[in-house]
Image 1 (cartoon, rainbow, N blue to C red):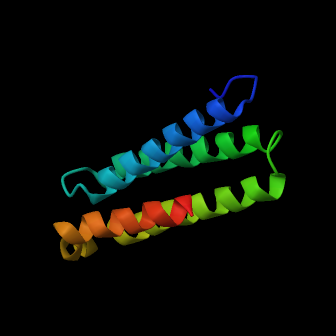
Image 2: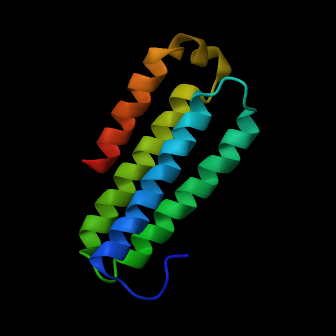
Length: 111
């Protein structure tokens, strides 16, 4: 998926794709009408994308940096599952609260 060569532009493009993928996952988690099994399948796919990205770019970038990025991204994904995974707890995250929560999680993953 990530190709065989690395350049700053290519790495940035791949990172943007990864953050878009995480953003889509957070949208899915906030959707009250989506079956939880579907959400878990997407969670597994996003985790795999994060792992592949960090593993590929660890060759060219600082390996500890990629380990930190992977850990931070995993934490964001796990928080989303724990906060929005249970439909009973989702009712308190309606409207703007969901968007604020999603924005906060995304900002933490980029910082």
